[in-house]
Length: 370
Image 1 (cartoon, helix red, strand yellow):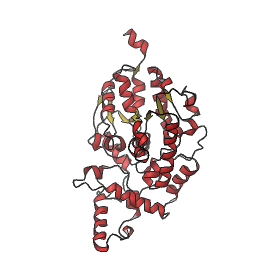
Image 2 (image 1 turned 135 degrees about the vertical axis):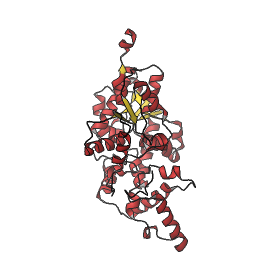
Image 3 (image 1 turned 90 degrees about the horizontal axis):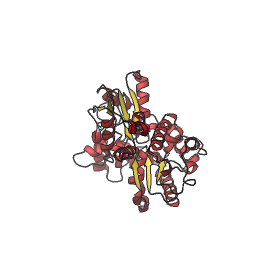
């Protein structure tokens, strides 16, 4: 995603060029902050478009993250960034909510904890958004209802009060120490309960478990990490659930951390094409456009002439789709808020992939009757 278009402080190309000129003139000990504005660094959503499209392989994000870590060390954080780190420290979650009872509502849906169901096959990682955000809870609820229809609820377990943040917001903000602490704690829990498979609705959790955790403890390389779109596609392919087709026109918003970082673009398209008609946005798949929430940007304000989420919503609405399909609770929140602000809530629905699957389910008795 190009940032040299005047609507945000950061241009990765310009940033790297300024650092190169500084090094050439002042040497390796040069102070980067003499030429780099803090807003440039905080504006990065770590979407990866600059790095993945760079013809000479410059790793812009690594540079930005190193400088963010320096800002954290120097304590140069505004109130919202400080609050995020305080939430992670005091509550072990990014939402600043008491961790006790975070999954009680799931128990009411019939989901058991790892202690109650020690023979579980899949750990459902609910995540901070899924645990505390009302809209994200609806996404988790849809997934649970699908599991019930598939007869797989007993193969799922949750950590309950033992679940904490995956650590992604801390790492992307630049607080590496806190990330390491959260990651090590989670890995020990996974070992304790013999976790072999993790299902998550959040691409950020998916990415951190799959790519970051194994670098901390190679044991994590034995754990299969599954995004819920992959799991739902498998359920459909195996005949565990059946979906009906309608004439709804869908478009898909691919999360950066799912499509670009992890090249997961097929499952969501297989599902959507079984349910309705897919019309792609100009920027889709691995060439997707960011929603604006990544890089911990969800928790603080970035100076912008035009919000990234508004730009992305406009791109998706150019397809004239009736429903925008999301695959991330943060993407869903950003696009839903953009639709509200722009006053287009009555023109397009924004639903998670689990919600469109749940709405299209054909009950087993109906399949037999047909």
